Length: 387
Ligand SMILES: Cc1cc2nc3c(=O)[nH]c(=O)nc-3n(C[C@H](O)[C@H](O)[C@H](O)COP(=O)(O)O)c2cc1C
Image 1: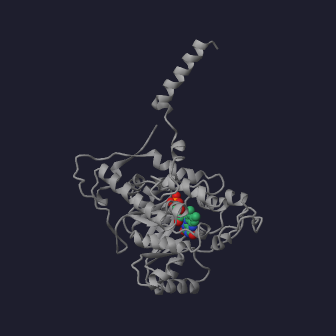
Image 2 (image 1 turned 90 degrees about the vertical axis):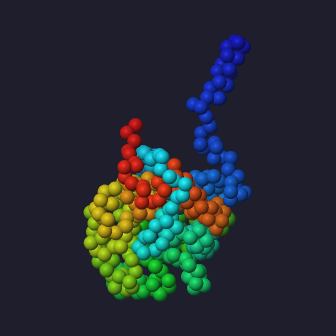
């Protein structure tokens, strides 16, 4: 190449670099996050970047991962990108009210912390840390554990207990009674955890599920068990619809049925006494190849026909994701990984910051969508993008 031709080529490159077509990829911008400061990350994605840097690989992969080819994990997020909003304008949105009544409880916003086992992979006593952040943030928390200290101190934590079930009626009753006596206000019954699912990342990392209690192996320690693919480890494969009644005969608590994707099951959950339904695919962690939750939501909402509230979870990282879920009929949403990225990045302040951020983004999205309250959000405001 002659000098003049080389210069011309350089000029062309320089021009192109300044063009919006060559703007920095989001990935390179994310590298600029200030890791020292809880106010560094400006969104949930950036909390994940910081958490990833700080966490043991076993822990990061356990939280971030889905099952097998992770098609459903990706589909959950892709559904928000494909579903677009048709905002309203010229509506007075100088005040935004995100409050709602759900199962008789007064909530500040439609955001609830989803149940997540294995938080001890992030830090010791992590369930209590998250529960404390939930209390400070006035956010209900679904959890199997970590709330007893706060509740025994009389703190106004709204705790919904979480179970995957148990084999007998007697054990179901005892469980429900224990939750009620311990200050639980509802039971979240997870119905999609019949078997330990097949998570390639964990299998590759030789992840021992015992680490969920004990935490990650210490520096230099080899993985305890050479994990094989979790092909046949039953949890509660014998559980059927009568389990809801079993729980209710133990204590008068609402039962929230989590893990519904098929509209026929949504209807059956209600017929069998469920007080709410959570459209969920466990964050893409149980069965790969199942429908994205935002796509499953409208049919489940129609099947339930307003008899009980329908909630949803899966892939929520932004306030506008929540607007889309509410528009498609969810009364409220659960967030799983988002608070865990806050936890992994900065502990309790990180969880609080993530919850604050999601609420702030939701409030702004409602303002820009012309919806001053949750009731104003409706199905006519969303459309499936065809391009
Ligand atoms: C690390 C981790 C552990 C989880 N453990 C449970 C659990 O014990 N019980 C349950 O019902 N769901 C569990 N889930 C699923 C969440 O409750 C929720 O359905 C899912 O995370 C929502 O998707 P998201 O993470 O994209 O928000 C877990 C999720 C994660 C990420």
